Every structure is written in structure tokens, then in C-alpha cells.
Image 1 (cartoon, helix red, strand yellow):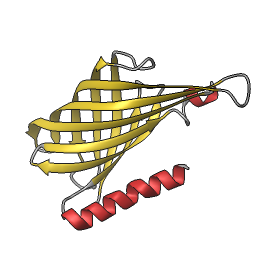
Image 2: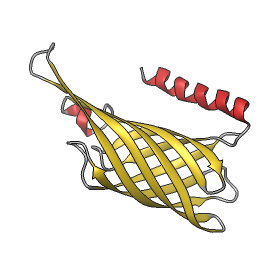
Image 3: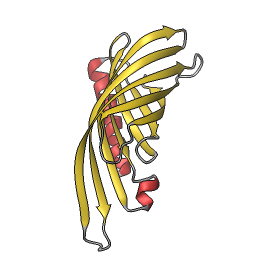
Image 4: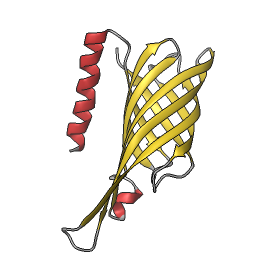
Length: 164
């Protein structure tokens, strides 16, 4: 399941890069808001300082998986670089998304499942290394509409590896 998800993300980026001839990037994220979840993100620059991204976070590898709680977050976001200085930039972020929860009950065949919406505003700082094709970013988020497992405030660490 996880390998197929990775290859789907990879195929989307490679095919869209060839079709659109834009510099695309692949992000590996660690979200400290949703049960310390790892995630993957695909980013597409629209114009200078503005980019769109789609991300997927899951608790299947984190603390939630040990408790029988599976949480999946599907998010769409817009980043706008407000201030740029050499290799560092300050940006704002708006993201919307859906959350899906599955809780394994005592019986092996019982699952409790629910879904909810997410709307968040954020501010972040990113730093691009001059000699390496790598960018680190941290984002602070405030959730205007939050799911039952989301705290009002959270932060995210990310590492971006650009394609071609």
C-alpha cells in the first residue's frame, strides 16, 4: 500500500513535469499536529512566489497506529512568499482538506469510521541551501475549522527535494 502510494505520487510529478515543463518538487513532511504524522507533498509553482501543493498525512506509522487509531489527512494548500532574502523566505499558507478516522474496536471486524473538514492558516520560514538541491521549511498553523484530532495550533517540519 505504502509503496504504491509513493509510486503514484512519483508518477504524477514526473508526468506533470514532462507535460508542463515547470520545476516541480516533492516534499517529505513531519506534522506535529496530527499525532506526529509523516506525510508526502507534491508542490507546483504557479508564478514567482506562489505555489500550490497537495499533501497526504497518515498516522499509520506514528503513535496512533499503536493505539488502533488510523487517521488519514488529504490537504490542498497555497503558499505565497511574502519576503525573500538570499536563500531564506517568509511565506503565508492557506490549506483546506479532509480527515478520515478509523478506530479498531475490540472485535476484529468492527471499525468506527468518521470524516471531517480542515481549514488552516499558517506562516512559515524556508531555507534553501546554496550548494545542495534541498530546502528545509517549518510552518506554524492555526486551524479555523478543525477535526476532532486536530489541535488549534500546530507546526510542521518539511524537507523539499526539487525535481530536475
